[in-house]
Image (cartoon, rainbow, N blue to C red; front, top):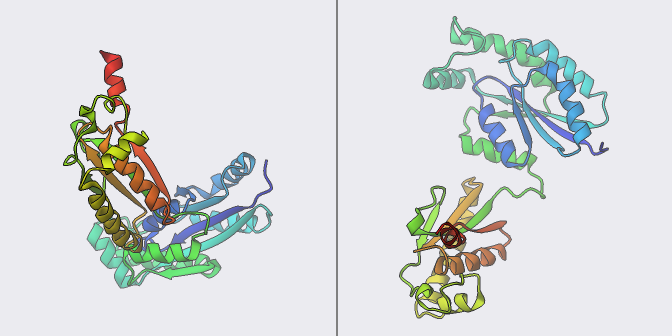
Length: 296
């Protein structure tokens, strides 16, 4: 059991106003997210969270897909106001009637309150039902003229905390003989460098060994190529962050993923980490040779 306060954000608003983008944004901010939970299940949900003590930030999407929405959500909010372990903030997303109609026409989806009737009738009815929630909201965002990326930026600006990185880098080595990593954003090929595999004392080692890394970077073009790669990444990374990208995978490959690519990926990851980017360094195929030996 923990005395730490649970920070709850309720994401609600007009259907079609951007709640899907919002919940995805909160996931990237480190929130435990639940979409369309029936309000009558929330009291038990709070108790489980309170007892676990492992979750402190929760974002819930609650909207008119739950038919008993209105009465139950208002009662739930009133109950939360009387607790001392949940701090609640309501985010209400809205858009003009014209924009909501346009979005529904584009996606060809039915409005939850107009399954068999006119779209505008459903929007009008929803506005009436949602008025009290709109009045209770601490933050209202009008998404009429916002792109999904702009909505994401607005949410980050209002809910980002300093302890949660919203962009991280994966520096990965791999072997081309085992296939390209399908999740790579940037792929660099260092097979143009001499292969330490053909030097007897280096063959059983990897690019994590200092003498192998020294050999790789002692080649005439290695340092020039590395510095140009590092400069390119330093130039590009702020742009990726500005565009709202949450992660970037930089994959560096050689033939078997043992020597050259490992040395490069390790160094590039360590240098980018010095620029205060959160960096994970992985060597996808480092143990492939060992696995092949064990199978033979």
